[in-house]
Image (cartoon, rainbow, N blue to C red; front, top):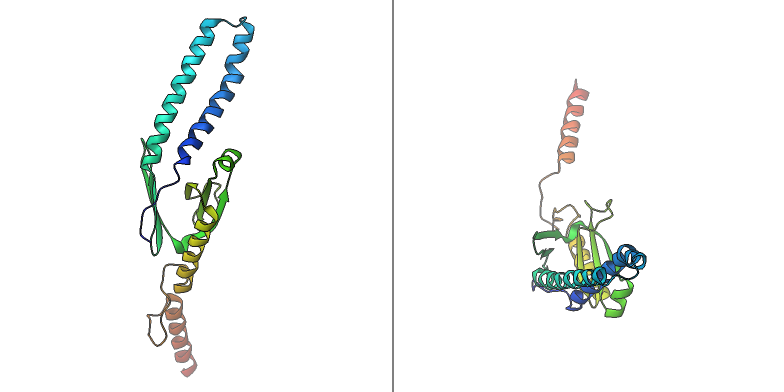
Length: 194
């Protein structure tokens, strides 16, 4: 615990392959019809090839920088994370707020042997986007079970609201509802005496 970890290096390959496939799709939709209509003009083909090489080089550089910026840490009571090349994002999610742990694996991820673990919390559960995505996980099921056990430990130790459950024999301050109930009982007792 409390040791930062990074995704698998295969995540860089995934980002490059996914980006390449996206660029290839855009080329098929936009450039190939122009080439076919122009009788395969070598100038257009050369410009297109140069653009594709430039885009792929940029994506490869960005993917490596993105990978280097990422880290996650499982602490005793929370998960913390950081990532980002141009816009850095950090976050902390307490275990007692976690509601869903989903493993996702697309076709390219399956070939590379990695998955993404999506973590949703009580505040984010109504949204389509998870609060944290731990990307490039080789053993996603094991990581999910580890986090589930940490969530259970945290849930067993408290009521899910961040308030620690009192130990036996230890008095705790009354909740607001208990205070209101006690005041109402006092008022009723006074009214019954009159």
